[in-house]
Image 1: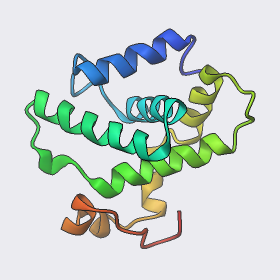
Image 2: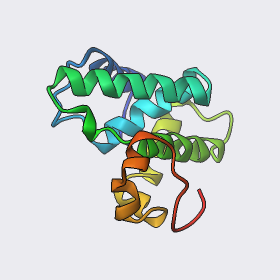
Image 3: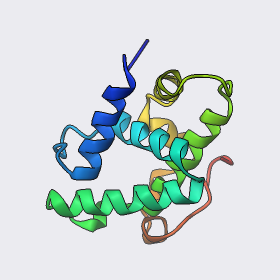
Image 4: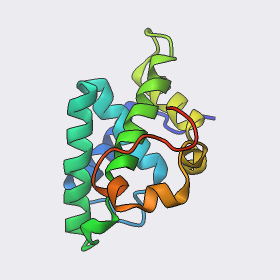
Length: 138
């Protein structure tokens, strides 16, 4: 299954996130993953995490969603999981195919519950800082 037909489609998602022109209801799981692939493909993991974190705060602020919705553990988890999938793809794979491969592999947002209990993710510690998975290692 191909999620994107062109790199330009990916860029539209990234620009929509960064400019906050994407509506909060249209920026769903696959959009988050798309932006993560973009950031990880164009910078280091730490830089990608910083870009995602600041982008999420900007997006939440712009759309009037309280920052309490943000979860640092989830943000780090998804950046690391996307990065691990990217490492498993052949180096010569095009950016477009790489993005689609990540989306296919991580299409189900509930994969996080293979690693974390809901109680752990809802904790104040998980919302404000990194918490190691409590079900299985990442």
